[in-house]
Image (tube, rainbow, N blue to C red):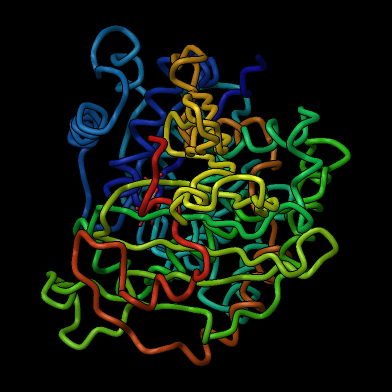
Length: 478
Ligand code: BG6
C-alpha cells in the first residue's frame, strides 16, 4: 500500500472531545499500523484558555489513547509518536505561536513536507480558522479537513464554501463524514456491486421500505456547547445518515474514483424530495434541560426520526425511514431493507404478523465490526408446513482478521493524506441536502418528550413508520 508523503498534521481543537475520542487515538493507530508517512509531525492547537505545554499535550494524548484507543500507548511506536507531538496556541485571526510551531515542524522533517489542517472545532469557528490560514500563508502546500455539520442551512453552507474556496481550491478541501469511512458502510458498495445476487432486487419492484437506524445510548457527554446549537437533525441526520442513504440508494458508479463515486451519490441527493415537516418526529429526552450548559427552555431536539423519499426510477414510492437520538435503548447502526412479501396463500395463515415481518429482509449492521443478514422464512421441521423466521448471517468478526481494520476517522485521515477525495463529501451534494431540508428548518414540528432508555417519543415514532415496524425493536439477529 502506498505511504503518504511526509506531512505536518495540524489539529485545531486538539484538546476537544473529538480529538480525545477519535483523532488522537486514530492517528496513533495509524502510526502503529505503519500507515503514517515516514516523516510526520502533529501540532495540536487551541485557544489560549486551553493552552498546554508540549509535554502536557503528550500526556493528554497518552490518556486519550489509553482510554479510547485500540493499542497501548507504550513501546517504541508510542515513543516516536509522542516525540512527534507539540502544542501551539492560535486565536484566529491571530496565528500567534502556531506559525513558528508549524515552521519548526516543517524544518524538523526537512524538504517540503505537505501540511494538513484538521478543523475539529465548532462549525462557527471554521471561517475564522480558514481566514487565518490564508492570511498567514500557512495554507500554502496544504489541504484542509473540515468537520461536519457543513453549515447550518443552505445559505450558511454556501457562505462557508465561499470562505473556504477563497483560500483552498476544491481539490484541497476534504469535508469529512466519518460514517463514510466505516468498513461496513464501504462494504455496502462491495455487497451491491461485486455480487450478482443483491443488485437485481435492489429497487422499488422488490423493496417495500428502507430503514437507517442509528440510536445512541450516549447522552451529551459534556458537549452542550456544541450540541445546543446543533441538535440531532444537524448532528446526525443531515450528515451521517443521509450520506449512508446516498451509498444505499446510488446507481452503480463507472468506477470508485472520486468523481464517479461522488457523482452517483450526489444524484441521489438531487432526487430527494423536500422534507415534509409532517413526516418528521422531533424529540427531547426527559432531563435534557437540566444538563450543565443547556438552556432551561431549550428547544434543541435530541432525537429525530423522519421519512424521506428519493424520487427517481429506482426508488419512487419507497419510503426511507431514518432515526437517530441520544439516550435511547441501544447503541446501534443498522440499515434494513424490507422486501416486498410474496403471496403466502399456500402456507398456513396462523403465522403471527411480526414473524412474517421478520423474514424477507436484508439487514446490514454497520457498527464496528458489523454483520449482514439475509432474513427469510423457513419451514420448521415437522409434519405441518409451519414457517419461522431465520437468517443467513455474515459476520465481519468471524470472517476476516480485524487487525487491519481501520476506524472511520483513521481511514479518512489516511485518504486525505493520500489526496483521495472519494469518501469525502462535495459541496453540491451537501447544498442539495440542505435545500431539501429547508421546509423542515423553516417549520419544525413541536418537540415531544421521551424517556431515557426508550426508542423515542411514542406513539409518534411507531406511527411514522406504520404499517412497517422499526426492525431494532423486535430484532432477532444480533
Ligand atoms: C458524531 C456526532 O459525528 O458522531 C456524535 O457528533 C455521535 O454526536 C457520533 O455520537 C457517533 O459516531 P460513532 O462513530 O461514535 O458511532
